[in-house]
Length: 262
Image 1 (tube, rainbow, N blue to C red):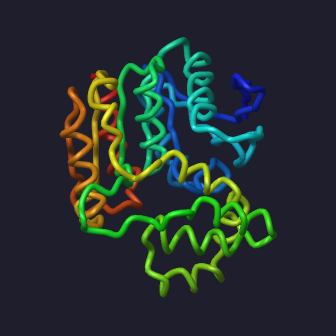
Image 2: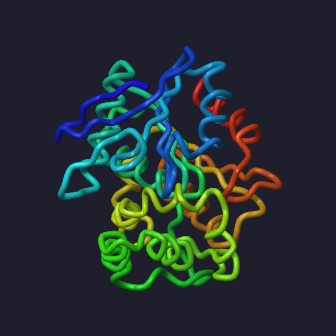
């Protein structure tokens, strides 16, 4: 494990492996290296042809945290990692991490190519937006000693997971890992903003971009991916057959490798 110091002094833990063009992996809600075997597997597969930087977003895993939170600080974390990679890099973002990666590109980060998997914007009436004030409710639950309540609330509202699926998850081995980063869920809410595709990205993000989704994902996620690809000036949209939001690394890796090495 290595660490880089972000602009505000936060220590960002990361792993680097492989050789070739550098790519930074940006996780979504709950994702961090010690808890996320799928991203670890993806990093290993990509490292066959790329230099892969897989990091813990602030407040998770082996990264520290600094208050007050702002999305701009998370963009500075990405910038610090890009500097470590040599001054420019490709960036891949997953779910809310895709929205964060998109925001970094719009802010002028030294991103050479951008790949996004199912940024969870809501672009039509195929799902109900999260309720107003959700970020504050999540923060209050986590701060009051009920991280499980925060996790359940996030899953059933922001992530649109049916409530009948969440109950059994509480008894599964993954639940403690969810609870350990419950305090960062408001960060993902801040990254998503109003859950609409920011209009300014249409002119600000000019780098080549790949937007991917899974054919087995809910319609609202597929519609969002298509809208993002339509919005950006240099973007291509690709749908992976048989895949959902929990995309298989072995299916995603070849698509990303081809994109980042072309």
